[in-house]
Length: 302
Image (cartoon, rainbow, N blue to C red; front, side, top):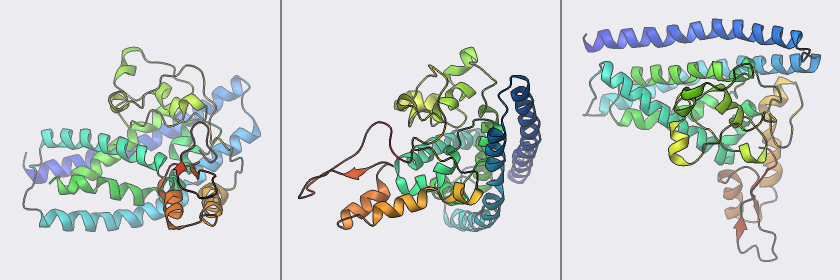
């Protein structure tokens, strides 16, 4: 096939898959709610929490469409200036998907370890209920972070359509791993991100914090030392629980918390540290404030 035919096929396939993911997600969420009714786990509070997760989609999609338009313009502008361009074919499509999955791992790690980015990603982790609706619990600022981290793929010479398609597929894959109904999956657990692995990622227990960042593949976590197997069913949410069901509170819960820390900064260095160090970081209490340490273990706001 020609480059144009490959691009048309890949673009159609990826976005068509995402449309079907939305359909299956709705069906699977209905099945989860039915299961909760049968097992008597269903409560009004859990249902409201599920609705709260779904309501985050409205502001997210509003900014997503705006940012996507800007990203298309930016990526193609840069792509046209690059003299090296990787041919568009099935091999390059698979390669960019693999690299996009690695990029997702790096991005995911960074937004957990850099508090400025955690402002956005904490929305996804703030629910104490873990079901398919959690997969769609996004901050309206998430698209901005994603554009930044995927920019290197453009600089490598990949056609932006391949990059956008790969991003869509990495995100679409993850809808089915947000549930408690599917147990461990045998040999697949070695290389794929599974519900078991991702339950760990959403755990607020000390041994589960900042583990299992993978998108499609779990091999990145195994390679880079961030893998943790599921030893018991996690406690979900932040280490300092966010119990509000108000969509506005859900979106901006971490903002006043960061502001309170920033106003206590005694100098520019501490101010920057509060923004760029992990959530829960505080300066070492000393009269001279000569050095700072990072808090380990369960951290406020995580």
